[in-house]
Image (cartoon, rainbow, N blue to C red; front, side, top):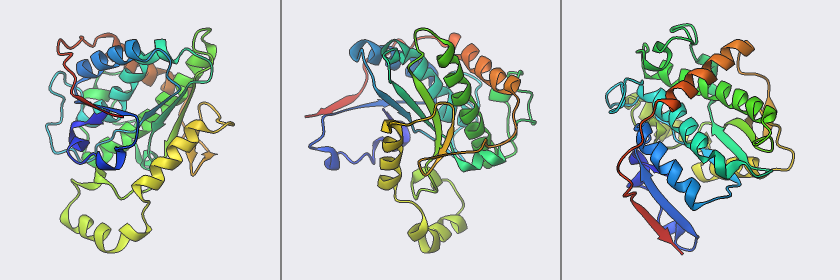
Length: 265
């Protein structure tokens, strides 16, 4: 799936020899994500690996989605992924399926105290700035992945599905398109040579999802599980999971099923 912000720059020519289907979706529109996920579950009855890689930072659009009052970073970085995985569950029930949520080391800076987790404001409130919103969404993503893996482990139907979160490294990508001019100049002139190449980071994420000894519920960095991002009680993780599931349960199905796609054989 290719989000609106990445579609125009998607490397079609590099994929000409791949068996590839590209579908464009507005990941800020959870109804659209739900409808597409349901279509994919019908089309692909057995899915081995799902990588949830979309992300926005310092998003310049409105602070809410077009269809709800959800803060844009929370909507794209966590809720769109959780919605996708939830409605792909019929295809993930087979033994050995993997789900990789791309989080970030900046989750260390996430703020779980600005809004009570059990309050709707946790997903709808306004953060101090885009950096805090991004970091908090990535922290919530890591905790959601951990709790989802625990839920799957207890489920008779989805027990074989493994869920992890991963920090891909500091990647020189379009994620930084909304930073200020000075930061862009710093990245372009100094940091880019030492930042990770997007292709290498992507290859590592795929390799992680396919590795034999993947440990469910862990946070990975450079293919290695690392310690918990920060102290969080089981109750906090459960509250994040329950809040996400409550939002998913209330998503209306989009009436538009004319998904834009391109198949390359």
